[in-house]
Length: 209
Image 1 (cartoon, rainbow, N blue to C red):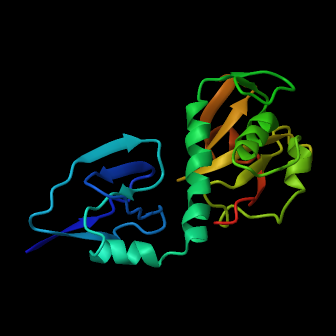
Image 2: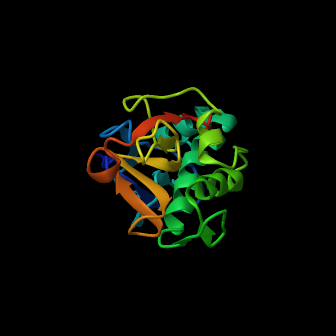
């Protein structure tokens, strides 16, 4: 008899089954319902749910198991790259509520482009400091092309001039440092409300995407 563990297709979470040795298996929002691990009937594990994380980590005791073998097939560089988006978004979420401040790039106060600059710099990726220059630093992506971790650009005054940036979280939400009502780091809807007709394009700076 075997028990099968399936991904739950939530927006962002971490599932951890803890036993002896570590085998990491990543599951992204792009593979909902995918079978990620088969456990024998006598396997024992402790499951923890945590919000605002973006991958499933499974720690399995038996390295000869199917899950361990499949995890070991992944190239180390691939596993390392796939963690960048998760780390960047985790850092971004940790800054929720930090206050807006003109010309600041953290660690506790940010303007919009300073917040994006801070997140990428903390993850070893160099990007320009201003929203306008950031928007020119990669291939333009349409609304249908953007993925989690991509940088989004806005013309909030409808003057054909980029003046705001943020990071896409997926599921139609993005995180940014707003000079508006929130006056700080907040999460906003991309497809409705104020920003619906202000979005212009995105760019991708994380190779794993």
